[in-house]
Length: 91
Image 1 (cartoon, helix red, strand yellow):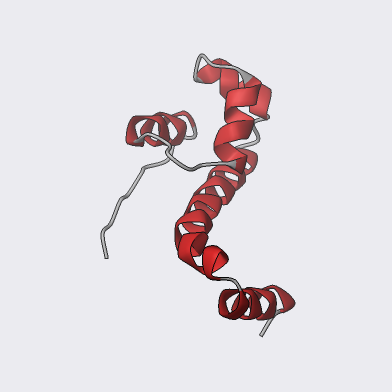
Image 2 (cartoon, rainbow, N blue to C red; image 1 turned 120 degrees about the vertical axis):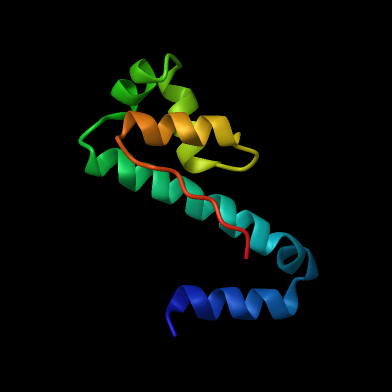
Protein backbone atom coordinates (compact mmCIF):
# COMPACT_ATOMS: atom_id res chain seq x y z
CA UNK A 1 0.00 0.00 0.00
CA UNK A 2 1.40 3.42 -0.95
CA UNK A 3 2.05 6.12 1.61
CA UNK A 4 -0.82 8.15 0.14
CA UNK A 5 -3.26 5.25 0.49
CA UNK A 6 -2.10 4.65 4.07
CA UNK A 7 -2.61 8.33 4.86
CA UNK A 8 -6.09 8.33 3.33
CA UNK A 9 -7.08 5.16 5.21
CA UNK A 10 -5.95 6.58 8.56
CA UNK A 11 -7.55 9.94 7.87
CA UNK A 12 -10.89 8.32 6.95
CA UNK A 13 -10.88 6.46 10.27
CA UNK A 14 -10.03 9.50 12.38
CA UNK A 15 -11.80 12.36 10.57
CA UNK A 16 -15.52 12.10 9.80
CA UNK A 17 -15.61 15.35 7.82
CA UNK A 18 -12.75 14.14 5.62
CA UNK A 19 -14.56 10.86 5.02
CA UNK A 20 -17.88 12.51 4.11
CA UNK A 21 -16.49 14.59 1.25
CA UNK A 22 -13.60 12.41 0.20
CA UNK A 23 -15.09 10.47 -2.72
CA UNK A 24 -16.64 13.51 -4.37
CA UNK A 25 -13.47 15.52 -3.97
CA UNK A 26 -11.33 12.66 -5.19
CA UNK A 27 -13.44 12.25 -8.34
CA UNK A 28 -13.09 15.96 -9.11
CA UNK A 29 -9.35 15.72 -8.56
CA UNK A 30 -9.09 12.76 -10.96
CA UNK A 31 -11.02 14.59 -13.68
CA UNK A 32 -8.66 17.54 -13.42
CA UNK A 33 -5.62 15.27 -13.59
CA UNK A 34 -7.00 13.47 -16.66
CA UNK A 35 -7.67 16.77 -18.41
CA UNK A 36 -4.20 18.11 -17.64
CA UNK A 37 -2.54 14.90 -18.84
CA UNK A 38 -4.56 14.92 -22.06
CA UNK A 39 -3.66 18.56 -22.72
CA UNK A 40 0.02 17.93 -22.07
CA UNK A 41 0.03 14.80 -24.26
CA UNK A 42 -1.41 16.95 -27.05
CA UNK A 43 1.51 19.35 -26.65
CA UNK A 44 -0.62 22.34 -25.68
CA UNK A 45 0.12 24.85 -22.96
CA UNK A 46 -2.64 26.20 -20.76
CA UNK A 47 -2.41 29.47 -22.70
CA UNK A 48 -2.87 27.69 -26.05
CA UNK A 49 -5.78 25.67 -24.66
CA UNK A 50 -7.39 28.85 -23.38
CA UNK A 51 -7.10 30.48 -26.80
CA UNK A 52 -8.73 27.48 -28.49
CA UNK A 53 -11.58 27.53 -25.96
CA UNK A 54 -11.93 31.31 -26.11
CA UNK A 55 -11.26 31.73 -22.42
CA UNK A 56 -8.43 32.73 -20.07
CA UNK A 57 -5.44 30.71 -18.93
CA UNK A 58 -6.68 31.04 -15.34
CA UNK A 59 -9.90 29.24 -16.34
CA UNK A 60 -7.89 26.31 -17.71
CA UNK A 61 -5.83 26.20 -14.52
CA UNK A 62 -9.00 26.23 -12.43
CA UNK A 63 -10.48 23.37 -14.48
CA UNK A 64 -7.33 21.28 -14.14
CA UNK A 65 -6.81 21.96 -10.45
CA UNK A 66 -10.40 22.21 -9.17
CA UNK A 67 -12.60 20.31 -11.61
CA UNK A 68 -15.58 20.30 -9.26
CA UNK A 69 -18.86 21.45 -10.76
CA UNK A 70 -17.46 21.42 -14.29
CA UNK A 71 -20.14 21.44 -16.97
CA UNK A 72 -20.50 18.51 -19.31
CA UNK A 73 -20.44 20.96 -22.24
CA UNK A 74 -17.08 22.28 -21.02
CA UNK A 75 -15.68 18.75 -20.85
CA UNK A 76 -16.94 18.08 -24.38
CA UNK A 77 -15.28 21.25 -25.70
CA UNK A 78 -12.04 20.44 -23.89
CA UNK A 79 -12.00 16.93 -25.40
CA UNK A 80 -12.86 18.22 -28.89
CA UNK A 81 -9.96 20.69 -28.88
CA UNK A 82 -7.66 17.78 -28.02
CA UNK A 83 -9.15 15.61 -30.75
CA UNK A 84 -10.51 13.25 -28.12
CA UNK A 85 -13.87 11.75 -27.39
CA UNK A 86 -15.67 12.18 -24.07
CA UNK A 87 -17.27 9.08 -22.59
CA UNK A 88 -19.53 9.21 -19.54
CA UNK A 89 -20.66 6.18 -17.60
CA UNK A 90 -22.81 5.66 -14.55
CA UNK A 91 -21.82 2.71 -12.42
